[in-house]
Image 1: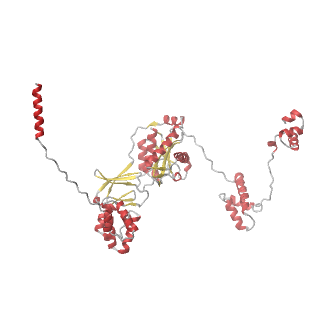
Image 2: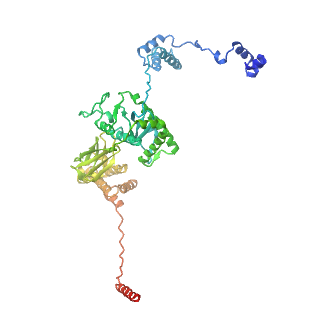
Length: 496
């Protein structure tokens, strides 16, 4: 059109614009841009393959709106064999989508919420499987307890092994002490840590909640003077801010791990330090909204709660204690005594008097057991006949090598005699070093030699002690001291 205004020639204007003369004449005649001349297509280029059954399809959609197009297509192919081809499914999906948009039931809209600064903190647990973090070369299965402030998106997270009350307490405390401030509300979903139903009626109901709050959780809220609240049951979107935050944290961690060049850490503490340094940098970039949150919250003016629960537990006749539905062995000398047990989120510690008797990783689950053969081997040696049906018999094999050795022994000695021989070997492992006994068993198995306690003892017996050399001590000549005293007296007289 610009060239036409200059030269008033269609041919030259078309050549300068890079188009055919006929096309140029069409646009000049219309006086509109090409984009303005595109008309919506209102006709079909091919016959609708579902026109014959559309009333039937529509009746299905009205009666059961949840039906997907793939299900309806399968129903049609079963009812009318050979009438439809698999490639026509896409056409049916377009018809169903158009029908739902024009005549289908209303959909539930997401109601965006306006958050007030410093009003609430939201907490949730999230899995970290996709991060594939390893500790000393072994895959570390764990969760993150994520606490975030919806107004500013400030985030904090701690490593935990389960969605337990201990993990929730540790996560909430860590976030609050990192902030140095406390919001008015603390919101969780209906997790068992916060709202587990207690049969004996110790749970307390809070107005507006659908499930009763755990007494231990309420004690945590009272300590920090926060008001607890939960989402409606089955309404995870009410905790949507922290749910979305979970994904953001894991994406940020994945990028940080790529920059680091390794997903392996020497310890859990090193991994958690790395995690929190990443979050600290992210929070530092949130600027003024975090400052508004902090200004709106009250100062944190209480002490940190202990991150364990203390219980008094009596040692059973099996030399075990039962902690959170799991069994742990302790030295048999403590049978009948009561231990003070501290239950942490990741470990347990058992004390008698002022001395630590057991410190081990806490089992996650129910009816699990951690039995140390060193605690009961003395009783087994005295009563070997009880080994065959011992309830913790499988825990008496510290490794696969010990199990193979036991099977090898029983090829020669059956019954109690074989058990006695194996228990003597296990007693040797408890008395010396398990690693040395395992090496000895592995060598005997590799050499296809008969395994017995004496053969293993020959491998691990300490070397003959070297004799201490006898040193001759020369007699002390006391006259030398008299000579020194005489010289001192003579010098004193000369000075006078």
